[in-house]
Image 1 (tube, rainbow, N blue to C red):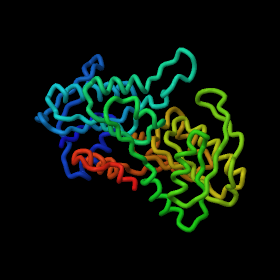
Image 2 (cartoon, one colour):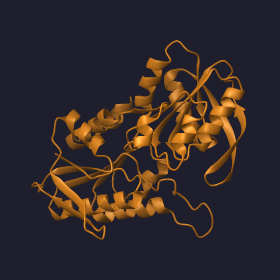
Image 3 (cartoon, helix red, strand yellow):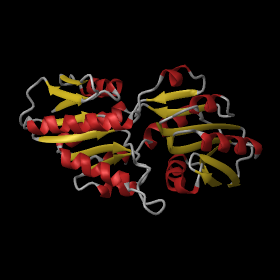
Image 4 (tube, helix red, strand yellow):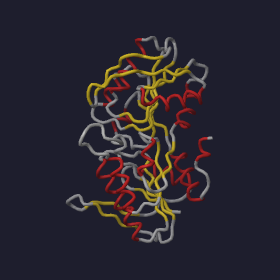
Length: 310
């Protein structure tokens, strides 16, 4: 087995390799003066089971191209099997035609990864589960809930909890975590007037006097979470925190979170943290390296991945 890291999230790749006790394969991923991407695998990978770790986060197009070129380099180096390990799958929010004459970019990206030569995909908390069907190759979608559950149980032991879905679309995810924790569920009914803006309308469920835990898969502008936190406090919530798998946190999101009533926003290291995230007083990171490493080991050993969630 070989593990190769591109440039989007090398710290996570190093943590995965340390957990497995297998050094990262030496490879050069660099750019020419016109920003063309060049990849050179510096070790023999013929007949090897190779895992390429690369989140397609900001800059999404550059990181996606790095992944594609690396997969092609491995295919032409006669690797036996190539698994694209994509902790954060960019373009996942474009999983359907939201209006006439718009693309389904998640399917396009799936086609690109397949045509580049990937034999398998390992990802985490896809924005829409049906994206697994966009790939014509085996796709494993891990869940960040077990990592979050352990942290919530340690921090909120003995407190009366309510798990809150920030919108109707996330109810299944929030209900699953609430069931694992033995907590109640609340739902925020919101109206989105335009892309990137949201207005909280109503809270379904009892949050008064309880520690409220917002749960979502992606936090981008953080407008939805911050509006939800304000609404929960106004409804009598004792405290508000948020657990989100992918901390995209673009634009002024970090400042928005810092100024919100949220005690903490907990994200994972599926996306490499920016300096603003690292210095923020109320944003924390959990590592998914052990979970990803365990899944990689099981795929390589041809053993069950689903038992990770039993």
